[in-house]
Length: 544
Image (cartoon, rainbow, N blue to C red):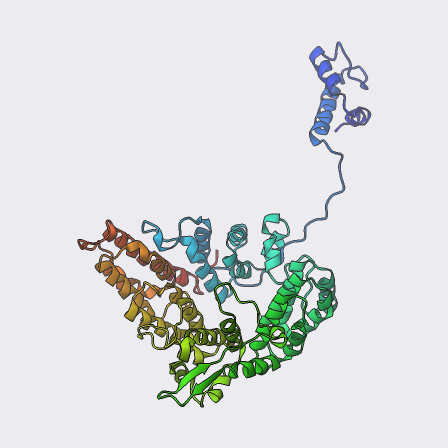
């Protein structure tokens, strides 16, 4: 800008209308305000108009510049191989629609493969490509089940981005260390300051992270402010003690049994009952043992039950809920809570030195079998006791497939979770071979992925049998969707024979044959795609 223009800009804050009039009339007929007449007047007019235009468009006075953003932190992990990076972009570009085996067509559901891809990439320690981070955060925002794996893969740069976009703030709450002022776990003063001054979500994240590294320090931090916390916050904080629960937590949990909040008291009692050597577990064992015994005077030794006649104050303090739900008898309700909270090690000594299998096989008098076995199921799940879980499940080929007691599908699924992956898969495979797929969906959901070969073969054989029988195909859509995600990719070659449209029996559902062909085609295509995904993540391929 010339010296004259600067003078005009300083002396004319905004004379836009006068400048426009001067330009229309001409500088030989009117001189712009503040400009001396002469041969430079037309140029001075244009300079003044340019300065006024900038002022009018800016609209605000210049402000102090904002602090320059710090660069995103480095991610020291190795970069993805080139083919894997392309695959990630394709998976993230897919938008969720109708999912699972109920879709029509042979195209795989890419979004349903993203969790497995992330798990494999994290297992190999790869870093996310920077250009993929926005789409990765968007995917995690829409699906909470993706968040742990997605944020682990995204790494520190995702947290840097999340601080710049309100839509991604969930990452700051979900990732350890994600808060803007989150201290390192080796910074005692920072930890204490954040615990006392931070937002609730930041405090939960801090307590969870600290608990995983130093359980005693996390518990001590919680004890400092316990008396001043809100009841709903105390409940959430108490729940964080599940990770790394140990006998050292007993003293604190015993004090929590006297809490003002019933929910807090019940949670504290539940945690204490998961510690078989705790004083609460001993009290519950004594109460439960007084209610259950073996009657040896009968022709066959039989378990007899005498349920509690009252729920006293001591029982309520130990977490027994006095008021029964609608439709439940009070005495059976109290009995179930006592047995559920008693250590399972109580029963062999109480019931004649029998093993769990022998105890479960005993008849139970007066219709108490369902209540008693259901309580033992809950105890086995809570205490993660494989021997009792095995006994209560029974043989998968049994007519009830749940042992001598009445064990529901949901209870069987929870019991299976206490077994190792191989035994779990073998039990479910035996169940499917005997009972088919109609009740297997919940059980399949707790099996390790990829399914072990015996389980995979059992599922494919059962689907083939259902197809050949002309069964209503849509009733198997859930299992087919699970198979796409859980079958071992090496099974794809075995399925080629199932791709043709089968001959439909006369009583088959209309269109069943073409549906089955589509479903098996999608299954084969998905399995091969999963195999390719894993191969692309193998080390050795050049990075992008």
